[in-house]
Length: 212
Length: 212
Image (tube, rainbow over the protein chains, first blue to last red):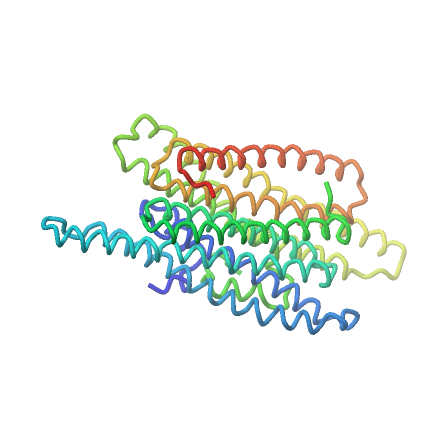
């Protein structure tokens, strides 16, 4: 199915229904795409203003990167759903003979690794969106600073949600080296994502007077 | 325009383009709706399992509340866009005579209050989604715990993004009592949202083994 062709209302109904897909992984990819789009909007609103011309090159770079991420994350909605379905299919494989049991076990492990890697990519891209949110919050059109903050906060939500979807798959993966590698990477990304969010919050307070 | 009838791809393109709407406020309403839908999915996956029958009544209650919020937040996408447009229209009013200046000033202030109230409602409903995420994370189908965590993390992102959109409007509102009241409410809601998120994280770690 072309998930990105569904209307907002239809997609949300499909999230809500009793089918496990689209679930948290797919939704976090969508939210990452939305956050990237907000960074693009702030860049566009900055490019429209000549008094920000010192920052136009940065905004062009942001546009280019965020468009790529937005399109990739839209594709990830479907990738996440497929990866989940493959895990389910693997679990359904016959397990009567020893050979079948072995083949099933291998298929499950492979499917789980794939199902971990898709939301892991969402984590990586969400961290990237956060980095660019810091740029547009700091140097973008001041009138759109709440949009830059929104991009950062939503990308961080997508990051955290995607991370939970990596971790739940890691719980069933027997390849310890793979699990340790992924956890190590997630720890690094978490530090970077938290750092970028903190920076955006500071800019929001100082430049945007958005403190409580 | 019926924004919720746009496809995911079309909607995201409209976020990204140089038009300031839909912006951070509208996107946060959408993400709140998505998070509510994830709570519904976890409830549905729990109602499908007889071994969770002790919690079926809670899940039915969650379904009812989350469906209401999901539909309301979908409407808020349009409300947020309209509220922003009304602010812009008010600023465009003539200001040649003293009378016109006065009328314009009043219209701007009224439009700003409305533009603050719409994302404020998104904050309130996101806090509500977080509360129910805690319920489904704690008592829902364990296989869907990463979806419950996703609901919480995304609702928190929506909460924070919507808050920035309230605050940017408050910056231009002259009615100090209104501003103080809204900030007071936001502080309370922030405490509640943070508390619910923290609780979900603990459940995720203990019950779901989703620690890093």
